[in-house]
Structures are given as C-alpha cells and as structure tokens.
Length: 360
Image (cartoon, rainbow, N blue to C red):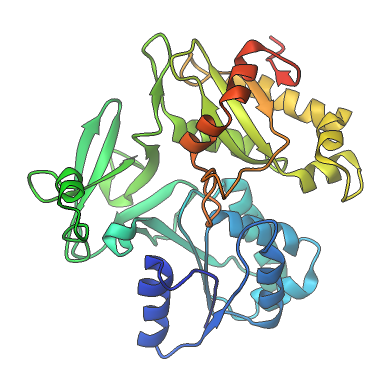
C-alpha cells in the first residue's frame, strides 16, 4: 500500500511506484501534497488517514514528516501502524533527520523501520545503485542493481560514475547531438554524479555519494572545493535551524555559505510566535548566536581552504521554485541560487550587514 505524491510522468512516480503497485496487486493512494511549506500539510493529512506498508519520499519530505511527528501522536500512530520499509532518493538524507525517524519509530512501535536508498536518474529508469544492506548510513548508495554495469572515471579529484545496462535509455528523442554528448565510446551513460567506496578495503560494502562533478569549483588558488560533502556537513551541524546550504567561492580566496534557515525551528529556538516575521526571527539574539556558533565550528573543523568556511549569510527569502532554485522534490539547485542571488554573493564577500565571520 502506497501513499505517493510523485506525478506519473516522473520516472520514479510512474515507472517505479505505479508499476510496483500493479505488479504486486497493491493499492496506491494519490497524495495531492508535496514536500514544500505550502503543501506538506496535505501529505500529513493523508498519512493520518492512510497507513502505508512501504513509503517513498525525498529527504525534504521525510524531514517535514519527522518534525511533525514529534508533536502529532495521530500521525505517528498511523504512519507506523503497518509500514515495513522507508525509501528516499533525489538528494541526501541528513543523519540528524535519519536518527530522529529511528528514535520516533522505536518510541512508537518498538523498532526501527528499514530505510533503503540508492542512486539513479531518469535515464536509468530510475534504478541504478541500491543500498539495502543492514548497515546503511547517510550518504551510502550501495551496490549496482542486477544487470547494471558501473564505470568509474576520474574527474579532477572525484570519480564520476557511468551506467550501462538494459534499463539505461538508448538516447534522447530527436536529439542526436545530446545523445552523442551523453554517452562515452563504450556506450556508458555519463551521469555527472561522483561516488567513492565506503571502505576501499571492503568493496562489498558498496559506495557512497560524493556530490556532482559539475557542482565543484576552484578557489582563486586553484584548490578544488568538493561541494557535496561540505554541504552535507554544514546541514547536519546546523540541525534543526538549517534547511539547506549553497556553497560559494568560485575564483575567490575562501569559501562562503548562503544559508536557507528553517524559520519554524528558529522561531521555536527563540521562543517567538509562529507568525513572527522572518527578519525579526533572524535578528533574535538566540538565533544570531546559533548561527555564529555554527560558523565558528565550521571554521574550526576545516583542514584547509577547501573545507574551511570563512563567512556566511543567512537568507530571509526561501528558495524559489519559479526561478529553478529548488525542484518540486525539494532539492536545491546550487547554480541557479548563485546566479539569481549574485548580488547577495557580492554582499557576502564584501562583509556587509548580516554577514557572519568566524570569531577566530
């Protein structure tokens, strides 16, 4: 039994979830909600009414559900009544959210719910790599699905994964140039995703996600910045007040962050009413001190210019779907944010009002 919001023209929503339901003779309830502030309430309402046996969502959706369950007993009891498995994809699930789901599950039904994940894309329809072992943590993506071949290609200081198999598209409709650009001379699809082994001495443990090769950039010193792991580290350290992070610094001397805050968590942190304006929330002393501590800790945790956060700006305006800054799955488009908020990036590096600098 599924409760799902993904549209059927989406390869995971249609090819995977609808097909899975039909093949197994299951029941699919259509969720008109989405993992966005405006529509998550509809998803929560549906999950209070329907108890799925397996549940799929993106990390942002699980984050919202986990936060809501802490104060919503009916939601907890309904979601955990029958569920045997969770599955997330589309982005990385932060370890604090994962731990919160485990804790609430143990309190509600006496055991943790198995969490599966993996890596794939529309062009792999959608499955390519799956993490379904017992020991799975944030960032793990597992091993190739049966029939899949992976090709690991060095790309700067990362390793790109390429795919070949029966589920991989043969090309793009009426786009021969794009097709030619997307496949290498051995017929492997070039994903642009970077992976690395969980344990190089134990290949059977599989791989972990290492960001997008196209997201990474060089500082003015020529030093590569690996965006994915840094972004994940900051989001985890900023729980519960950080929703997402964009890493800046292309052709500059040091790394800077644009931080999208979780305003509801910040309001609770500062003891402010739920309708307090964003600017007032971010100006609250408790919230200011939280983000200052975060920047100080990230500066101290850095081992060099490629990992050391030197400045940050907490943004008042949330990411915009209309401008492509965030997808309908809740994933941040780093390049779009940096493009549309170029003036804020300049403000960040000018050290203007509201910019957090490490107290060294």
